[in-house]
Length: 398
Ligand code: CAA
Image 1: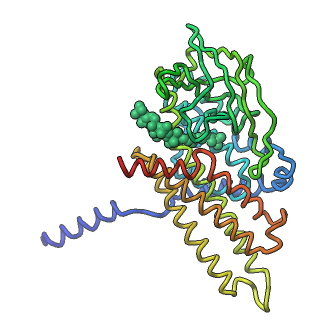
Image 2: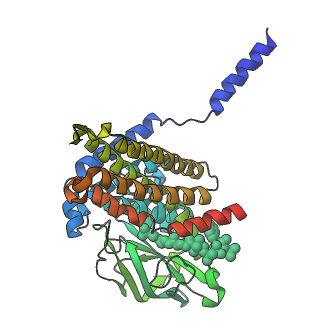
Image 3: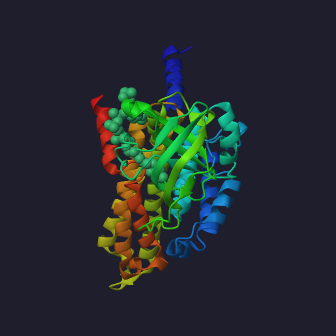
């Protein structure tokens, strides 16, 4: 027996087991391919026209639900796919290469609405609301933003007055994704203004309840066919059983939920960037100028090199945050970093993709101008880039 040799071989085996692994599993690759096929075959046809007419992709979203993409991470016992966050990131990236009005609906439903109810809801709430949400039979909306409470989310004016067996909800929510098509709304409202953010509660409100109305379609720069509007609550009776968590948990509920939501938006931004890069690369192989394909000009090569490098870094941050969440590590910091970085890369990459396309990049037919318009919102919703910097800085100082 050679002790030194045995110890060395044991050490090497353990090292191999513990080694970091950047490879996707076969299951991950299958999910990625399914999402890519769905994006190409179901979302791509008509994407320019829907964007133009601000037409919600109702059929595509319904198909998305049937395939299980609206409740990917939910436990199968509640009708979900039981997948990990990495699978979700991969699927979000593929769909976001093509149609971000569809992928934002998917992101809000998966990581805000389903996750929020599954993690903090009661068994009754899960049976009643999570099951149809996870099965894609309906979509949900997350109602935090108000006309005067965007980044400063503690300044909730929507009130929920305790009336014994129910709350009476009054107020207006702004910029609500899935606003008109939602079957349920997760609504943050103030029950005790004196208690500040500790007086905020989160409620599940069914669409169609008396007193719930929606405003007109917002005319947006990008994600134009996503369903965005204001939602108004006037003397809406919400049963006590529909409050999520303990009294006063609403602000923390919103913050915890948004930490995961930011992984979804990071993946969306990553998809926008990689979609624009793929288009720019393909175009540069076809388009000729000064006697050769433009990819043979160093001016274009340097742009493509920077795009590829930044997208790779964005992907690693995004997957690292997904890994943190799946390993039940703290992911508030990594999701803020992923969302901030991926959205900046999306903006920069899409601008360069339009530039590589020249005049063709400026017209709708070539898709990159739409991706450039879509990129902007990823720096704004689910916390602006400035809010992500607040979250990151507070984490550093803690
Ligand atoms: N998890 C748990 N608790 C958290 C938390 C987190 N991630 N972040 C904050 N908290 C807690 C704090 O510990 C604190 O609790 P205590 O006072 O009991 O200790 C409380 O919440 C208040 O926190 P802060 O003092 O940090 O609050 P703040 O007023 O300074 O605001 C902020 C912090 C990060 C700026 C926050 O307001 C924020 O994230 N704003 C942006 C809101 C946002 O992202 N909106 C997006 C709308 S949803 C959307 O866009 C969806 C869509 O449709 C696409």
